[in-house]
Image 1: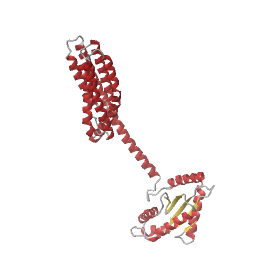
Image 2: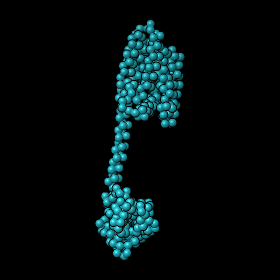
Image 3: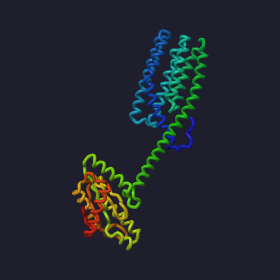
Image 4: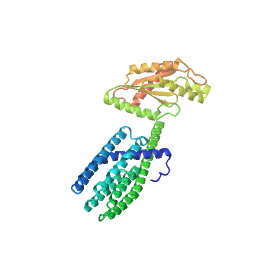
Length: 375
């Protein structure tokens, strides 16, 4: 088994664990069909070999089969960790190979045609297991290697019988070819697993990147709140929901009072810091489900889903008081106030009309002396 190129140790462990898990699941399915192989062997051997030999083989195989199923079920129940369950399951693979190999010891040497049939059956078992163990080739080497060696030794003990040597040579050549081709295929499978894991990791990175791009595209870089793009999409969504359900929603338009003075006196860097701190304070005062966006400059717009006008006015007043309560933690600390205009969606109203209503309420608040809520 060739090492996987360009993979870290941790990635190789993941590939090996994945291959082991796939093998365990395939091994379990194969064990469920194994009794069919017993039936074929017993049917062909019936009357041609001593009954005690056939019965002994069936009993031994049944015991191995039951232990294999129990071991696999336990591994699957415990999460199929290779470090924990690998040694036990490799022993079961070896016992499975031994049970098949005992065909050569217990059932061969009594009939030339039967010997040929048994070798053909073992070739078929090896071919089937090459597919079962393709993601865990070490198990295949162990299982088929023991099957081949025990059966060949059993056949060799009857070497005086006609065609026995030919059968041994034919089975050996077949097994060598199976080992060679299975090894190459197994490497391709492991490379495929590694590629799938790499692609999955890349896809996850791309999804994360696309999510970040979408978030960045809808987020105001300065304050971390939604931008006009996000606001337009949200208002469209809320409008469609209200039209279809009849449920109200409201918006609040906020404007920091005398913000130009902050920039003129303290500079734009302090002004930017004030905007970030203001946005943070507003966000902390919102309910779950409310969304704050930066509308432009020192203006912010808040969307209040499922909120009638009276509740919107209460939310707005709570925000106004929270802003007025203590200075922003800027350098230097700034005591500010905010004017707020509230508007609630009315049936048949467009988004532009709703925005105009909130804007009109905001200017009403400013004309009335600022630091207040109007609708």
